[in-house]
Every structure is written in structure tokens, then in C-alpha cells.
Length: 320
Image 1: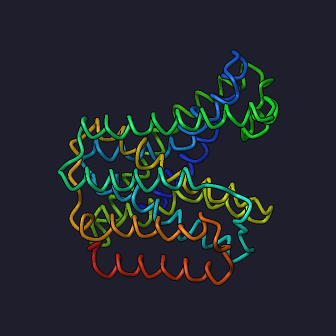
Image 2: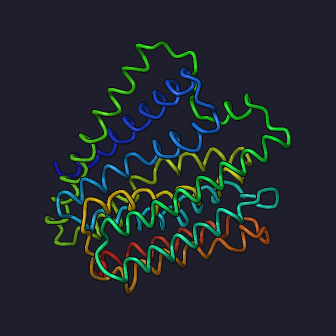
């Protein structure tokens, strides 16, 4: 029953998040918001809405292990699983994509997050620091997009890049999508958190372990589906960009907002193990970001092997 509750909450989060994004994008385009701004704000935040609601709910329920575990575990899964599994199906060719700038931002965000965690429970001041960094990332992305636009990217190309964008969506449909999204997200988060906490009690493990495994993998499934399709279409820039962008938002947006609902004490073991695993998995992308290597099937096997080993270590050592 607890597993069904958690799974139902996860499904509801994914569906509600998707409807919220589609409704918000359609509404924004209807009222004349530029597609570029919609892409950098509404889509970026909307696709992270499930993780954000989980983190806020976990903070309010005094379950910081799930909040930290969801973000840190998702960042680890995004690299080892979300890149590793598609690589088993087809080689991810990196020669034609340049993600060095966003990769550097992800590493800086990871180091700042680790430093803030080392200084004690995360609170509003830490949240402001992370959100300020996020603002810098968004401003930089906006300027880069504008520069690309000057170089020849047409507005309709920007619109085409917005997933499920429909500026002609009927007003009633937009309203229904927004209402279902806004109602479904908190309900799904509540079901997932309650189910996950009950599973942790039943198995005799910490909230952090459940956050790092069940919740983290569950919330990484949409990214996995996206990267599998992008790999089959030979869109390496989408694969790496999706993972790096998701990791950036997890740290700066999700934990930045959740910190205002704290203080969020750092679970035991994170400062000595999990945060460093997160940083190491981020750095493992360096030769691919620098376009020295393609992500071949052998690398995919290696990534998945590392992830299975990490999960095994968590389960057998109680998250330490």
C-alpha cells in the first residue's frame, strides 16, 4: 500500500507538472510573452515543479532527508543513469555540442551548495545565495540566447523548441490544465512523501536513503525518457544540456526555495559521502563536455555499474 501510495504520488506529480507547463506556456504565448522568456523561466521552473513541491513538503513535514536525498540523489542519477542507460542503446556523439559554459556553472553551483551545507542547516540566507546564483545563470542564458538570435535564430525557431507549445490552445483548455496542475502537484507531493516515509519506517532505513533512491530515481524518470529519445535522434546537445540544466535547477532553484521553509539540517553521512559522490559524478562528465570522448556503450555500462554500486552501498550501509 505504501509503495502504491508513493508510486501514485509520483505519477500524479509527473502528469500535473506536465499539464501545468503546457497550460502556462500556452497562456504566456497568448498574452504576448516572448518564447525565449517562456523557455528560460516558465518551462525551466515548471519542469522542476514536482521536485520543488517534494522538497517544500519534506521541509514542512520535518523530513529534510527526503529533501536533500531527492536533490542529491537526482543529480547523481541524472549523470550515471540518465546518461548511462541511453548510451547502452546508442553512442552519444559529443563532438558537435558545446556545454562547457553550463557545465562550469553546474560545478560552481555544486561547490557552493556543499560549502553552504558544511556551514550548518540551510535557511533563508542560504536560500537567497542560491537564488541569486540562479538569477545569474538565467541572465547569462538570456544574453546567450539573444546573441544567438542576433546571429540568425528566428522567433519561430525559439517557439519550436518549446515542448508542447500551443499558442492557439482554447482558453477553457488552458484553464483546465492550470487548475489540474496546481491542484495535482501538492496532492502528488503529499502522497509521495507519506508513502516514502512509511516505506523508510517499514524497511528500517532513514528518510535520506529513501530520498536518495526511490524518490530520486522516480523524479529522474522524465529526464531519462527525454535523453533516450534525444540519443536515438543523435541530439547530444539535448542529452548533456538536459542533465546539466536539471542538476543546476535542482541545486539552486529547488534547494534555494526549500531553504526558506527550513532550517534544513544536513542528514548524517551527506557531508562525508553523498555530496562528494554528487560532485564526483558531475566531474566525470568533463572529458565528454570538452568533446574529447563520445559516450559509447562501454561508458554506458560503466556509468550504470557505478550507479548500481552506489545504491547497493546506500542500502547495505544505511545511507552512510
